[in-house]
Length: 405
Image (tube, rainbow, N blue to C red):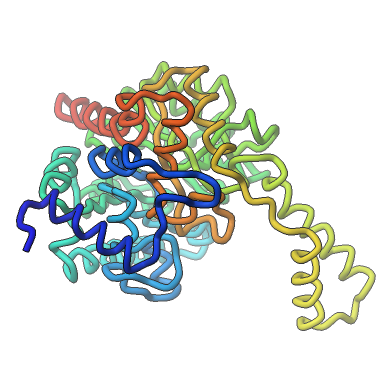
């Protein structure tokens, strides 16, 4: 029997590594050293965007145990050394118009609370940065909450306070479409030309109560509006660099990164291949274009015919998965541009489908990221900042600002 929490967690990791067949010593061409595995276990690893709640809403799985699908479960998280997984309370964009977003958000929060209730020796909620650190010391994985899409605020400040009381600690202002708070990077329709008037007031109140502002998904102008209004550091919970995906507004460009540095915020690199390199970014568009041509040429094609076409397209045009090296290129570029203190990890596990890079397929993979950073000459101190130290700093600064207001 292992009684010390950290030793117990290490023992569990070794057990699960063997039982799950996770060969961390050699993954598709990268040898993971004992140093990398040890650093992943010891360092605070904070992943700011994991879409488990909506995944199990759509197709239930008990992630307190090993699961056959998905990117997250407790055994794999232990192997990876994960300490804090921000659970995404994801609200699809259509809820802005059809209603019901508050009920969905409540239901997804309930699911996370139930996960902790089923396995209180494995998981713990974290309503503050200190609780996250305490959970790490006690050998538990923190499940703080982030709301992806501010639609459930419904234009009411009381809803903001309600969800803060329920445990939400960051809000992604918009998602796939513009909403009453902010224009979306994905929307052609940008009715506010940035933030709405309510959105600007919301940012100030988020600062005042200690709610982190997340600018992933918003339009460029909305980002700059946030920079002008926010008095506390903000995050991009799951975004990557536009330098590698030219013209794709969902990622951040160099000017935005420099503004984020001035704000004191952090960009958490998204692992999805479409966020990492241009060929993957354009793959979906090419697939849609090919399908449109097929339908035009075959107006009587059945659903079965269309499915056959899709499978054939994928066979002839394999999805261009990103490599670990390409992911590391994003870290390198950001560090050269703004320094080591302004980036972290926001994998988007369980949120980007079958598009994850080689060597970074699930939450057991953080040691591979650590090894890649070691191979590129990053110091242990710098790696610790990337893995969680920078996000910890932002959370603490947001809390400190709120404590004074």
